[in-house]
Image (cartoon, rainbow, N blue to C red; front, side):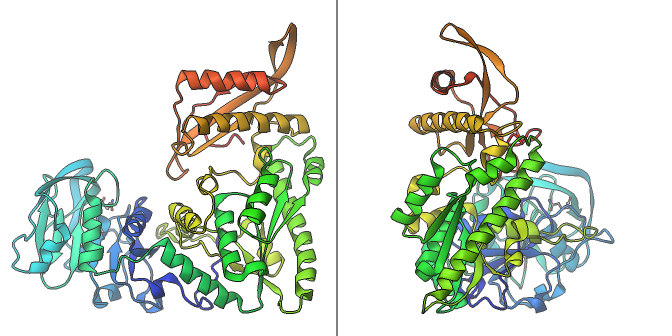
Length: 545
Ligand code: GLN
């Protein structure tokens, strides 16, 4: 969930310090990819909904990209861009719906095509088109005359918009690429941001770097230093910040960044809820305090969590118990820390709560959901900051996950931590189907640890997005020594995904599978059967509960 730390109080947001390409979102599922592709070129980019009023924007973009979208520009309730965009005197690139929107603005010649064009298409580039203007050829500079592109549209331009030249065609799209004769406006019917358009990156680079002249200075090194300065200004000379850490990438990077900025005036709290991975609390303490110098308090609350979880098998109830207990414990601990901290002579009050919000969460909360959808309000996980009357500080809210990882490396966080698979907040409680007992926790911890150890040994850890062991409900029969044992069933799951919205099972070879199953069966007391779970998401989810 998102609550912005506010542009008004924000001393130096990145769009003030880095050249920024503004991506206006018309609701395409690919819009965030445009922003990512730009960032990969070290050009800073931010996304805003297509309904953004330019008068409300406090900064000036170097260029604007209008995204694709599911609507038809000629429909009565179709979303349209603020016409001020065309008065801003910056280059504009329209992609798919964006192209159609530019055409609509320049003469309204867009209508439904006879056929949807979906999938690969051959693009023929005519760099200069029928124009004598030099700038029109810049969008396709360095590209071959024919290239493979990805199309996904049903509408088309019925004729050339006023003042434009054709710079590309395809069999079904006579206006697959257009450029304005006087202004730096470009439109393309295909999607350069998807990997199905192999040379799409060149088109985006040509627009951002050659046409908009955006500097390619968006590096994590540069951002890190500016962010540290920003945090110092925001928090002030005495201000203090508290935040929860879990051992995951985001909270570790955020904690280290806070420590670099304000030293021990950042208080990290780790709550051991008893359903962490094997030795996790110990390891996190070691890395954060000894390794990274972060001021950390570990609260061992495992007994309190486990007694509340006793006999509970409904997954939603388990989640609620863990979430609420976490909030209670964090708040109790925060009070103790505040009392101590505020009694030290040079320090002020704890005013801020650190939250490791990432840019995809921000995108999710601002992306255009269509004319009929009311934008839902977002809440913080558990509402902790409001409850404790703390302001939010979110140093990662402009970053994608891979950028967070890069920054982690720059901050000296060990590689195995920076590349770590995600781990759910309710921990092993949702990887144990049914009620949670100490014995089941031990079994799932040990099985998981063997699985991950073997994955690392085989050099597969970074190829896999998330891997773990889960404990199934019920028991099964096995033989141990000469005795029949009514034991537990372990399921192993490993998935590959880019965004965790969809996922595929990772395919291990059979030698690997046998080795891991054998080790778990032999080494983890109480396990009689090991299964591999290979359903994709959808219809399945990544976690079991
Ligand atoms: N709805 C428009 C069309 O079908 C735009 C599609 C898109 O932007 N992908 O042509």
